Length: 172
Image 1 (cartoon, rainbow, N blue to C red):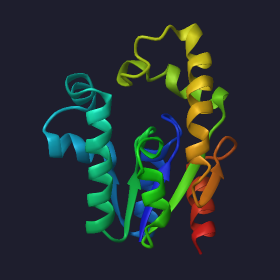
Image 2 (image 1 turned 45 degrees about the horizontal axis):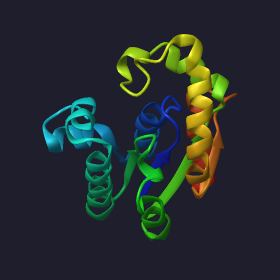
Image 3 (image 1 turned 90 degrees about the vertical axis):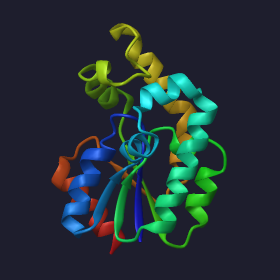
């Protein structure tokens, strides 16, 4: 089984993914890191040099490769991964995949992302006072895709161990 964590940037996909994989004794793959190794460049450079459409094609191909060639794996997807092309239908129809939406409020996402703006190309140039509005708008556009996940974990009032416990409980 491949467990795919979905959600907006800052929702905790990578942190939760590593902890969950460790707890389940599964492999962990961060989709962005996988693509960076495969393409021999950073995500921000790839996005800038190839453009968003080509990046999403590379991303869609990479997630299909992972899902076809890996088992007992937890995958942290990119925030936009399920929102483009036929990626979400592919994930929903694949018999070996469980999708989990790590839901966080706009307020929580804003608090987390303010601390790491410089490491996030999509928001690096947005003024701090405009970030909340940007997140709210972007999240509104993406939520319809995230909500198609098989499981949803509302992470706002949970710590890492509680989130991992909740996921394990839902998977059993």
